[in-house]
Image (cartoon, rainbow, N blue to C red; front, side, top):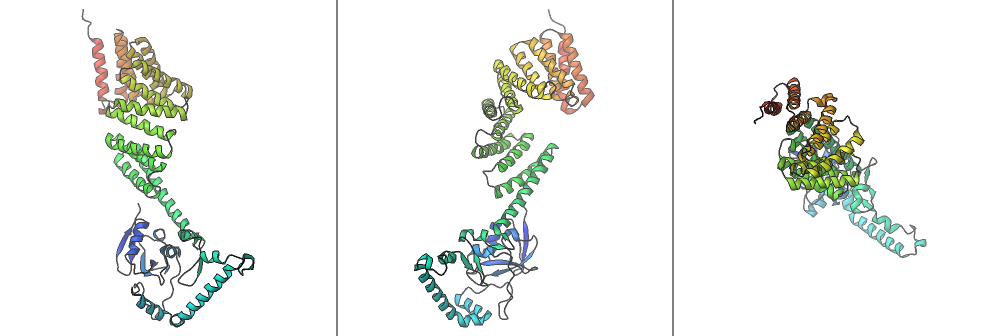
Length: 469
């Protein structure tokens, strides 16, 4: 939240005000049985609440000359401050709390009003009597056409004697205008300014996350979250997005418990606001499922991915890449649980969707072929597994940016293993060697690929061992 720092000229204090509530508490500290307000020391104009403050500006604390309600007083925006009569209190001084002393001070400021106050009261009584008498007449005979009473309910008088029309006390701040701008419009302008800042925080945070600068990204996501909680509340889709982004960054840092708390808050909001038939709700279930992969939570992982899949089938249909993604995750859960038949069924559905939507030269299709090969491998169907692995590698080699990826190297490793299971040692060694050459060529002995170097070297060693008889 962006703070506004102001200086009160009367006491020399410097105040950090971050929102309307803190502004109201500041005004309350100057309250003396009359409505307090602030005046800009430079422009000599009254300010309207937090939204009208200038950051770093100097203000003078004042109180109104009448006990106007706070809503009406706030609505008198940027009014020119009255020139002080010769005997008026010094600028910024609080008026006396004693009503008699207050009346005396007002009388000094305007002796004519003090002398004629009783006459004014008599005039008001006469006006009220005439109004009551007029109200009792038939509507067509009234001097005001029957609208006098209604008009009086819609009028308030300022300390300058100006008549201001409002629909009700609760709507006063929205109806009273200054230079054609309502307080409500000013508040909305300030709100949009804050939300625009939140969007910038989110964009910058996403850029940092792509650069793996997760700590800095989380800081910006949290700044955006605070603004959205203040301006939009908890139950809003943008608030959910902030929680979701924080969860993503925490997951990348392997802080699974913290990430899970944020993912669940995002899910809670989306279920309440969007319901359980929305793509964003499915995304939350999906990400919770992915998180449990790191936490080794089998049952909860399957439940989350299955819920995501059900929603995506209902909302997106069975020809969408997100639906294929959920089929793939459900298949992986079954595979790691040793349920190879169920795994194959789900992986095959993911492959069919991706082939139809993406074509046969896409990296996601290569991953689907590899997953299908793993399921066949688990079933002991080595020939089918070999064919699937080779199709995956063929696609990967035709996509330059995928040739050196871990997914491609994994597929080489799985192919080498399944060939060894079929006693095709020469072919197996050739596959391991190809993968080893790619790793060394693209990454050298990079620490991140060390595990793959060891796996491939081990594969070469195993296939070279003499067969014991």
